[in-house]
Image (cartoon, rainbow, N blue to C red):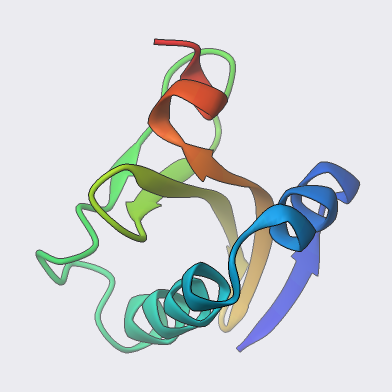
Length: 87
């Protein structure tokens, strides 16, 4: 898996606890193997992330990403549901 990251994503990852960072990379590996795995709850997003999708990292933490090509992903944001969507 090859990833490109947004600068906001990079800042957000630095603030995550190590346990959450490890779980995030585990979920990304799972996404690459099986994008429809029920653990991921993979789904398309609306505004402000219309062209992106989201997967679950934990019950409240989400990863916003875009599939670019074959094995390449663009990682846009990571955080709690509230931090990302203001709801």
